[in-house]
Length: 342
Image 1 (spheres, rainbow, N blue to C red):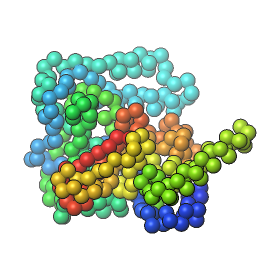
Image 2 (image 1 turned 180 degrees about the horizontal axis):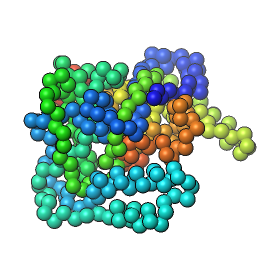
Image 3 (image 1 turned 90 degrees about the horizontal axis):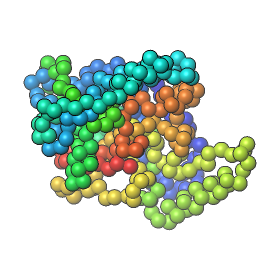
Image 4 (image 1 turned 180 degrees about the vertical axis):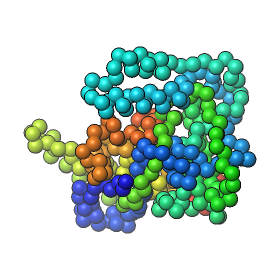
């Protein structure tokens, strides 16, 4: 089913003609729960992975023997979805008892902190289906993204670990039917629900903090004036004020290409650590497809649907409901990726 972004609530280039020079595009992926197969772009779906190629593993030393079972997480979500779709009373007493059991954490005393841990397949994207997907290495038409299901990496010991793989899909012979999976995970949000994608290319503009100062100051003043006007209205007349950041610049949700948002931290240079080339946004992994501040981006086809049921189809969680921006080197896509959590 097609997903269509509503027209923007204002023609921002008429207010700020200079923005035309910074206009870009991004592809909203619109993941929705479904049953993808290996031939499809997906989130949480089966990967087109060769049977004779080792599955990506985490080899960093960290605790990995205590957590929740992925099957229990999927089962819990299934029960909750069915219960809330049934009526507003939610789960029955019997279902609550089952949920309590499913939420238990399990210990695996036999698991070593230095053993290999299978990564979780997060997403795969076919270039022919995603208009704004940057070019990969020569001849590669498929990007596959994996992550470790524990926050235990990097200098802080609390960071994430990502693994990206480009490949030529036509060269994959027999597909690995049953990839290895972690027995337990440290965080539910690392376990995606299988989702099909409904790519849609839309116009986007840079994060305000990265615009020329004179233009940014004018946009900030305009935003503040709209907020003050909204505050002066009565509760009956009040509506969410339109803003540059949440209504016209960068859409929420999973998306490919375009501009990164820096709404949590100040903008940070993302230069390639190999060749120092400024990197481009490759993929944004978002905890929700929209929220109360970005409701204007909710697809036309889903206007009448409740947000609590449809705004988080992937069930992926980044930080405390944030987003992960993954960057790639335009000079050589084989160079290591960088990322930022917002």
